[in-house]
Each structure stands twice: as C-alpha cells, then as structure tokens.
Amino acid sequence: QKEVEQDPGPLSVPEGAIVSLNCTYSNSAFQYFMWYRQYSRKGPELLMYTYSSGNKEDGRFTAQVDKSSKYISLFIRDSQPSDSATYLCAMSVNTGTASKLTFGTGTRLQVTL
Amino acid sequence: NAGVMQNPRHLVRRRGQEARLRCSPMKGHSHVYWYRQLPEEGLKFMVYLQKENIIDESGMPKERFSAEFPKEGPSILRIQQVVRGDSAAYFCASSHDRNTYNEQFFGPGTRLTVL
Image 1: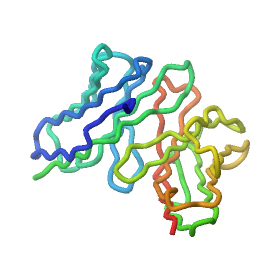
Image 2: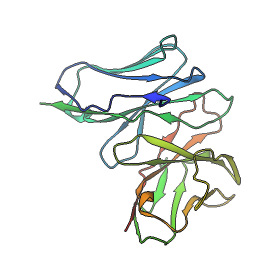
Image 3: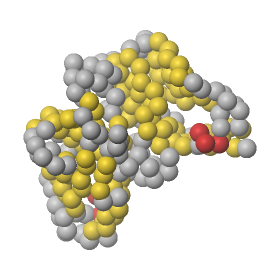
C-alpha cells in the first residue's frame, strides 16, 4: 500500500466550476501538508501548505486537512483554463527540522472553455 | 531573487556513461533535496543534503548513485554507468533554515534520457 494515495484523473471540468482534489494517507505521523501545481514539463510550484488539521484559504484556493480521517483536499473556486495542470499533494513528518516530502501520484486537471 | 536553478535542462547519455546533474538552491537556502519523477508517477524522494553533509539518503539506490553539496558551488547528483531505467526527470528542491512548514521550492528539473 502506498503511503499517499491520489486519484490520477484526468479530471475535466468546465470553466467556472468548483474543483475538488483529494489525497488519503496511511502514515499518522504526517503533520505538514502541501499542494503543488505542475504544468507539463515544468517543475512543481508550491500552492498551499498547512500544518495539522483545519482549513486554509488563499484566493480561489482552499486547503483542508482532516487528520482523523487521514484525508486532505484542495478546492479551486471559479476554475480557469490556466488552472489546467497536474496537482500533487505532498506531506511530511514533523522532525523539528527539514525533512523529505512524500508525494501522491498527482491528479491531472483539465478546465475547458 | 532567483529561484532554484538546475542544469542541464536536458541530458542524453548512452548506456554505461556517467550523468552529472547540478542544482543551485535559492539564495539563503542551505537545504537541498533531490527527487525523481518517472512518467505517470509522482515525485520520489532520493536524498536530502545540507552543506557538506548528507542528512537522509534513504531513497537513493545503493549502487551507481551519489550526491554531494560542497561548501562552495552547486549540489551534484551523479549517476554512474547509466541504464535505460534511469531515464526520468530529476528535480531539485531547496528550503530555508527557518522554514516553518517544511515548504520546499523546486527547480525546473533535468530530463535525463538514456539511449
């Protein structure tokens, strides 16, 4: 079983729709949670990061963490064609210092006109 | 402030040759991480380094792969005697000493093709 599971998609939505992207994980020691956006043949770009449970909002993006269910989500409101990319969830344990990230496989999102 | 830089962006090697991938972290960052991405897969951690030290190499293959981050200059990921299975995108990330949420910033990657 993978430590982090993510539906690869592709997910196709019309412009303006609300998008929900999700990951589940098995390691209860994970405490830092991140979402990255990766355009084709580019490096991952950090979108959101959260610590432990709760919600965090930044513009059209909302990140949610439910540690009791080991489930994290990224919501994109008013989706735009420029949001078309692969979205990767990532997480790490709290070692008190820096540490490696464990990634999901990524969900490919296509926002159509 | 320049982001993480990697070079070369594309590298073609024949089986048995050596590949050297370079990474310059963001200014002020002293932590460097290397990840590998195979087609249709997520990023897999390989190694984490601070200046002159390897902190975690739990994702590094035991043979043919090595990494360094010298006091001066970029971090280097070296792959000796490359095989076709080494073909992948290799990403470097860096983080600040005082980052709060372990946020890491990625470079554009080096795409290695082994013929």
